Image (cartoon, rainbow, N blue to C red; front, side):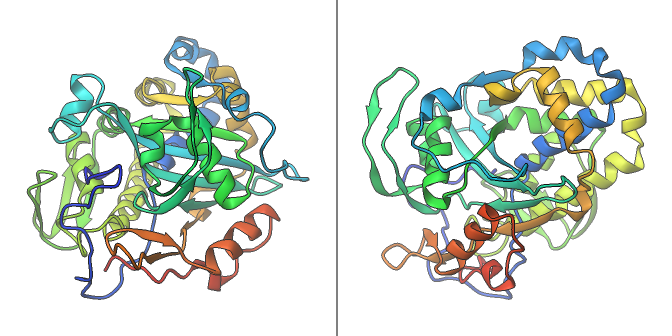
Length: 363
């Protein structure tokens, strides 16, 4: 959700070795959780979801299964589910370009990524965020136009989306984790802004003065009620907090997520079909899913299967990463922690505490 550089260029004010202060809690991506929030909203309105028939045309679908073929990890032997949720920074259209903070960046990129694992029984969930600056091996992929893109080593994770497309992001995650991704959800900047505005803003207790010329954020320490545009700047700020890297802002994202959920609960929005429709409409207009979820009926059915999952009990983990030795502005998966984490998810097992510790702090 920041507007830092991508496609392998050094991040402005990037971390380097200038890492001071106490490590921040490494909490995760926001937009992914907004998609999860949408699912829960639809689940809550399941008995009257016929009101949402007009939303059907809002949802865009991507045929992930066709694009990936059979060279994929095996499905879980349980009824557990894995979702890849992306927050995309699309510069297509005037509104998204403005929200992107200006500049001449074209196309779209993956700004936030999270693998959400819902174990068998659907009573809890764990979300693993993948830092956008993580260096990964991109597998051989096929673009939407059918052209082949060869495998490449040491590419930034968020560049895969802009260079090849969402199906290749799914394939990259499956190759690095050996976890089968069952569903794909994506929401863009404009959808996030409209969703916050639809609930009338979110009150945040800002932990310190933040003056970030890059994002336009200028807040003093203390409580502030933020509208959609201000909320975007808050969750995207990286130069105003921590070491200026992608990792330093994640604590703010977690704080905002909790405040957003609290706002929804305090307003009792879920008891009002009208308000639920308004929020769902804002979200679905910027929602892209795999073909299996690309209708309101399918999305609502999946949402109802998740009714037992309490968002407050969702465990959030950042993929353990270490600063890259050749480029300290980038990170790589830390071993053996990362492999241990993915293995626990594949086996529907409890994640060891040792697999949650990341050498790179962003503090």
